[in-house]
Length: 480
Image (tube, rainbow, N blue to C red):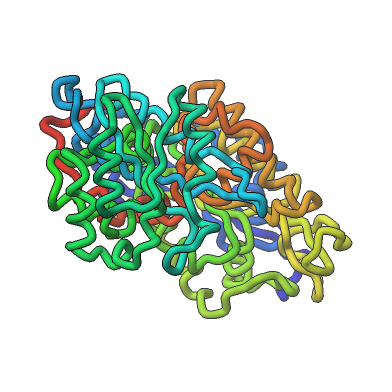
């Protein structure tokens, strides 16, 4: 381990205009980059926190970044909002929603977020006299599995829609066809779990054709499964036209593609989570777009070790040390300020009742593991976020499931809520970050909370989602 008394070095370098293609349209390149060269007592931007002149210089530089107005196509797919009343009245509309909500042992819904998110599209169709055929999966059943039936969702769906919906015992077949035939305008029929058929996930054409035969047109509002080419998300589009995006899916694309690709600047990305390997694609993609990258969670210890620091018994991916080094080098080349925590909360075991203490990131003793970012890091991260106009967050700062190690994650959630109130675009990119803002009680004030897990990650990585690609192209670009 390097000497803790040695001085650290932070460098402020000029970023060249040729370092990144996404800067080509900006009036001027970003003028500074803060990147750790020898992080010992302090790491990253936090190392200069005590130097007020340096901190003010950095803040001034960040605030001077160009702030282009976002007026670019968010995603060129036709939306249900593009369809007229004449397009919908009396038509049978197959709606693929993501109603995969958690249930307790008594089959009670414990979190209805995904149900509530699907309601605007369904209500729009009802109001326009459509006959709604609602499809979803629940859990990962192996064949027909009673505990994964969609029946427990009927009361909540009916309550939120203000009408009594009808539930089918299957998703295809003669009995379903009879229920569809008797469906009135403005009525809703909930099909049984589409994954009770193995053909769903195999995207078998004949199964997709049977689903499609129930309807006249298709609406995909299931962002959480849009990254899967299943029969109900991709296969049915080959048999139903038009095939359009629902309001929820469109909003996800607007934010995760539109707002991220052409953000109001400065644009910060906060990436956390336990492993670098699970976020490689996200980090690399965001390095092409963001001005500031804040890293937290278990992945930071791989970055520390890559720089020669002792990390005790903290989680480290030994085979990703070179990757961590290359990502830091890429940030420098791109002119991105990569900020690592300066202090961490460590524990003597991985448990909610573990003994804990806060130490500099360069002074983690043997036998101890880092489970959260420390108070100095929280302040530094907050100061950096104060300079921004757009922020996206994916992944917790620590083991927030344990109250003793939740401070970092909860502080970020509260900070983004504060920024939202000041007009900053705040995007919660799915997964544990969503759980964090809900736990703190600030979910309602965020600009957007993604309902997708894997779909959010893949979209942030720049991957094409099969369920989106299959939809009809928009007639004209939509300015956002």
